[in-house]
Image (cartoon, rainbow, N blue to C red; front, side, top):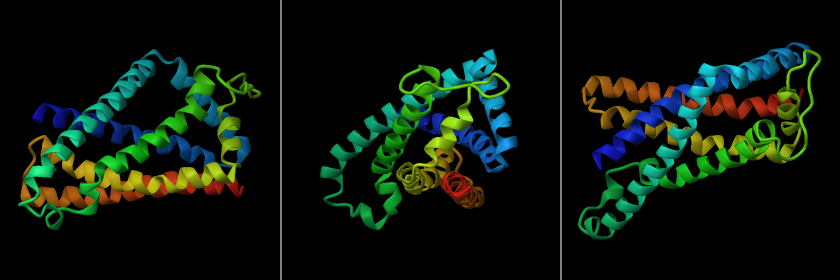
Length: 217
C-alpha cells in the first residue's frame, strides 16, 4: 500500500510541475493574435521536435498512466475496507468531502484529459480528424486548432467547469503527497496546506478563465 501511495504522490508532484508549464504556455493565448499565433506555434514545434522534451513527454504519459492505475487500485481497496471498518468508525466525521471523493474527482479529471487529448494530441500528433494547416513561418498551426475549439461555447463550458474538480483534486492531492512521502512537520504541513490551496486556485482559475477570454476576443 505504501508503495502504491508513493507512486501516486511522486507522479502527482510531477504532474503538478507540468501544469505550471502548461498554464504558462496557455497564457500566450491572451496576447494579441498576431503575436500569440507565432509564439504559440513556435513553442508547440519545439515541444514536438526537441529530443529532451520528447523524453519528458514519455515520462508525462507514463506518470498519467501510473497515477490513474494506482489511484484506481487504492480506491477499490478502500471501498472494500470501508464496508467493514467504517461500520464502527464514523470516518465521514473525520475527513473532508474532497478526501472522501478523490476517486470521483479523479474520474472527472480523467474524462477531461481524454477529451482534451482527443481534440489536441490525437489530431496534431496522430493526424486523426480534420487536418491541421501551417502558419506563415511553416509551423503546424496549433494556435488555430486551439482558437477554433475555444470559439465553441460548449467546449469552453466543458473545459471551464471541469477545472472545479481539477482544483479540488489538486488541493487535496498536493498537500497529501508530502505526508505520503514522510513530511510530518506540524508547522510545515500548515504552510504546505496554504500553498496547496493557492496553487489549486491559480491552476483552476487560470485554466478556466483563458478559454472564456479567447472566446470573447
